[in-house]
Image 1 (cartoon, helix red, strand yellow):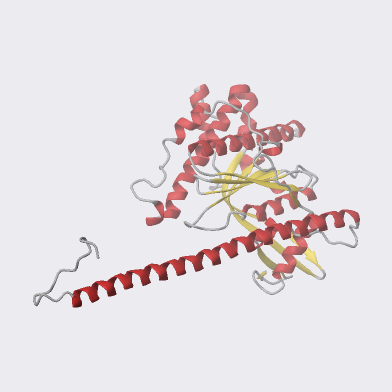
Image 2 (tube, rainbow, N blue to C red; image 1 turned 180 degrees about the vertical axis):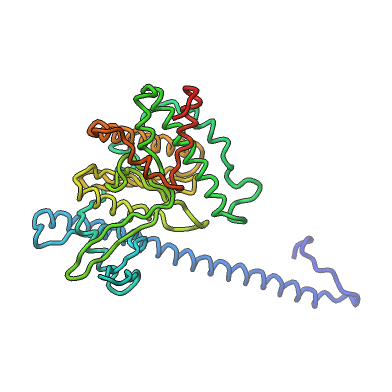
Length: 377
C-alpha cells in the first residue's frame, strides 16, 4: 500500500475495520461503473440495432418502390403502382369521411378499411420519389440575390428561445407568433420584389390575386365501388394565386405544434390532394409544401410529372436565409401564374377580392406599396 493510500487507525489503533470499509466502498464503485457500462452498452446495442433496422427498411422499401415503378410502367394494367415510402409516412394526416345521401357524413378515420382507401387514392396518382441529394439543381436551384431587406426585418421577430428555451413555456404560442411575423415579412418582401421590376398599375392585380390564407381545408371526393368518400387535410397557410374554386395554389404550410413533434412529412398529404385536384382541371400540378417551426424549414416539391422531392434547411441563420430565398422563389412563381391567369381573363380579377375572408393575409402588401410608392392599393 502506498503512502497516500494508508488507512488511518481508529481510536484503538486498529486499521482493519476502516480498511474493510474502504474496500467495500471501492468494490461498490467498481460495481456501479460496471453496471453503468453494461446498461449503456445494452442501450447502444439496442439503438444501433434500431438504426440498422431503419436503414435496412428504408433501403429495402426504396428497392421495392423502384422495382414496382418499373413493373408498373411496363405492365400498367397488371401491376399496381407502389404508394411510396414518404407517402406511407404521410397517410396519418388524412381525415376520411363516408358521404351518405340525405344523412350527415360519417368520419371513418382510423377504421379498418381507411388505410385501403388512402392507398387506393395514392396509387392512382402515380407519384414517384426523386432524390436530388444536396445539389442545388432542378427545383432546388437558388440564385445568389440580395435579400438584405428581409434579413434586416427578420431580426425584429420574436427571437429563438428568448430568456428561456421555448419548450419550458408556451411553445405553440411562440411558434405562432414567429410564424405570423415570418409570413408577413416574406409576403412583404415578395411584394417589394415585384414592384422593383413592375410598375404599380401593372402589379396591382397580381398583388391582389396572390394572397396567403390561414387555417384552410384541402379536400377531394372519390368513389370506390358503391361508396363515396371525402379525403381532407388541414393546413395552416395556403398561398393562392388565382381562383380558389379551381385550387390555384402553389404552396401549403404546416406549423410544428409541439416541441419534439415528428410530423415532418405531413405536408405531402395535402400536396397529393392539390396535385389530384389540379390534374382534374388540367392546370399546373406543380406545388410546394413547407413544414416549419419558423427556424428550421423542411420543404417539399411535386412537379408536373409527379416526381416529389424534399430539402431541409436546418440549423443557423445561413440555412434560415436559404429557406427565405426558396420561399421568395415560390412567390415569384405564384406571381407568374397569376399573370398567366390575368392575361386570359376578360374582366379585371375581382374574384379573390370578393372571396377574402378573415383568414386572408394582405396587409403587408399594402405596407409594401405604401413604403415604395406612397399610396395603398
